[in-house]
Every structure is written in C-alpha cells, then in structure tokens.
Image (cartoon, rainbow, N blue to C red; front, side, top):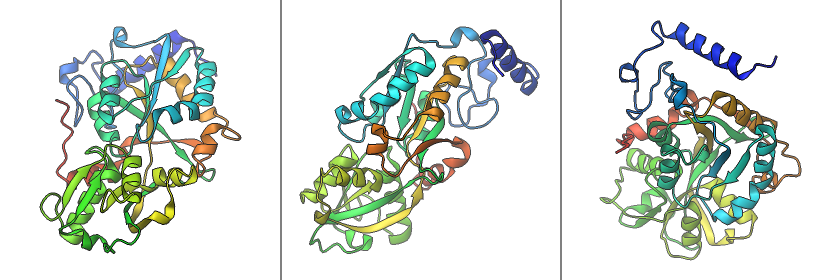
Length: 324
C-alpha cells in the first residue's frame, strides 16, 4: 500500500493523538529520561520523537551522511560511495558523505542540523541519542542475522604483559571517552574483575581512534591498548598492520556494532525512504562487502533493548550523558 505525504502525516498525527490524550502537549511537559531538554520521548522508547509541530520537520534537498570516525575518512568515502548512490536513487535526493574527524564533531553536526544520517560507534550511540537526537534504526549483520564485535586488550609481540592483571603499574591506551570497546567496557572490566582503576592502578592515554591504538601497539608505542577487534581485523585484512606484531590478552563477550540512525526531526517520508535504502541495498559485489567481510546486510535494531548492555556498562562506570 502506498501513502501520500498528506495521508502519512494524518496517520502519524492520529497515532500521536491516541498515544497522548492531549496531542497538543507542550514540549516542556514531555518525558525526556536522559535526553537533552530540546527533545521529547513520549512513547518512552529512549529516543527523541518527531516534533509535533510540522514546522520543526526537516526536508533537506541534500542528505548528509557520515560514518563513525574510526579510520582514514578518505578510505571510507570510497567504501560508502556505492551505498550513497543507492540512497540517492531511493530517496530522489542528492546524498553527500561527510568525513567527520572526531566523535564530538559528528554529534555536534547532527545536533546543529548539519548532519541527517550517521553511523555512530557502539559506545557513542547513547550519547548521540541523548545529546544529538539520533534515532538508531539499523546495523550491519551477517547473512544469517548474527552481528557484533568484541573488545580486545592487545600488547606488542614479546611483551611481559600476559593477562589484564599484569597491566597494574603499567600504561594502557584507550581511544576516546565515548567509545565502548576503546574505553567504557575495558574500564569496567579491569575495575570489576581485576580491581584496577584507571589513573590509579595504571596509567592511561587516549589515542583518538582504534586504528591509532592498533598501530601504536604494533609499533611498540603503547604497552597495551583496548580496541574493537572489528576495526583491527579490517586493518589486518588490508595489510595496514602485521598481525604477528600483536598479541591479544583478553577478548570480551560480543557487543552490538555501529548503529545507523537519522536525525529526530527528519521529515517522516524522507526518514522512511532512508530506511528503505538501507534495507534494500545489494551487498553482493559492493565495496561495503569488500570492506566489511563478515557482514552481508543491514538489520533493524531497537535502541532500548539492543543497547541495554551498553547503558549498563556506562552506569557501572558512573557515566552520565551530559550534553552541556
């Protein structure tokens, strides 16, 4: 069944009125949870809702898309090019890849309206949801629907650090404070299982990106580092790093991977076409397939349930989503 824009709008507003006996509820009265004050979560799914006032909806002529800044942006501009072309065809709009240099820059770009779609790293999803109005809807998965990656603590070949316990009195490289595998998960792990607290029982440094940490360990610049093995494995596949120079001393349980979402105030018709582009993309023979070898399609996600483990890790670390 095909809906016109006016019909779609009517159905959506009717749904809101059924959910909210007082559909004209002022934004100031809405539920927010961890969301910034400019957002509302009326259905309590932990993500920002579309504004009730249609004047707040965004219908851009050019859709801006960015991928989480884990490696050289120039590489990923090419990797995503075929997908960008597919999205342009499905949406009927121009689509541009925006190579962000940092997690903070990505969140701020969406918060300020300069970014419409983003692939946000696992640990950063709750931050982007709360502070930038990200509405996650998809992530990569293998053909059988399995997904995820693990956090690994790695050391240089020949290191006398044989287990996480040996990190006491040494130094460990993290990536970014918002990264799950690059900071949050290893911090919680080392504290809960080994009684080791950052900057008390071991020294810390921040490399900025997972590839920096991997290269730093391989080159002997870091005594140890916590990384996402999905990034490390892609670097190994591209022969950017020699795996013989790296030893893994810990591997975590599986976490959800990069979550893809759109800005909360994107016009609903545009948002649906964007989702359609993700779920109809043909992986076979694509540059995405060549880069993300384990994956074969996009699957739908639910931020409230799929990122529950990540929010629990944040809680264990005393993390709050402060948007100031």
